[in-house]
Length: 447
Image (cartoon, rainbow, N blue to C red; front, side):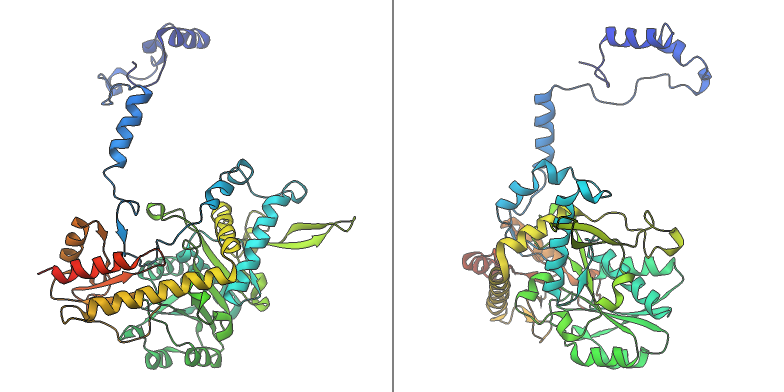
């Protein structure tokens, strides 16, 4: 066993001989003795492979995953079913070792994956074009805001407080360093305050950002918002849950200019928070303002189908001052996962996932609120998430749920202090009737 590096005495002797010194002390002779460490490093003794495996298993077992708990937590990351074939395909070396497709002639597989992904995202969102995936939903939203600023030459962006809190924080950071203004619109009963939006709209507003279903799970009404935004000659950016598009009108049908969102729910595991992928789609009018890469389809001189990087608006490919963004990753493995998921389920499958999530969440809502112990927070139509309030703190409730192997909801007062003792619960298609009934039973039994 060795204290740190797995070197034998013979290894060390050979290395010292190769560089022409006789000892470790001689190797560091040029370093004054008073600044040298005169004791051993505080590092554990070396372990065998079996011991290391056992040690890390013991650390891993300190965590509880969705394999151990029944998950009713959402708030931006969702426990949807992941078809088993996904891991088999993305584990192929040609996919998980793929790099940036600089040379189209030797990157046809990677380019086709991105092209097919872009096509499906555009179809799903009702838009005309999509780029290679972004880092996550929050940064995709920030990039969309920058697109709007570049397109309108205006300096302010409005965002509703019903948009995910983390997205708003990321956007604030992005715009702050670009000396752009971010205006937050308050919510009323869980939806955007449209009257306040009317007041804030002016000739300096580049875009308005709305999320639907919003952070509270409520389906926002976009018809009036779209008219107000476009009358002001601003852009409408809609953030959405891609699964919801299996049953809800697409943002494109509402007249959105840019659509963004978090793609984790498209077959990607929760992964303790990442890596995830963001998606960004737009109309042809703003195609050249999109960050990252856009893969296009073409034919070669023999008439065979092929794929190329049609537009590359990143600083590696064009002059830095002309680049729309410094996004340098297309999250291609996560995008491939989303592509396989969408391909496997198809239109009917996505609709089925959305319908089951919606129906089961409404059943859960009815079971939990049928007594007077838990009250409705928002009396609005919702998709798969809903908020309830009680006399107990959400933390106390979650502790009891955890004792019953249930992962409870998000504590709304963390980001929305007015909703004290309120929690946001999520129900996906994975949850069974017995699991939902157990949740309702445990909640009812909390004193």
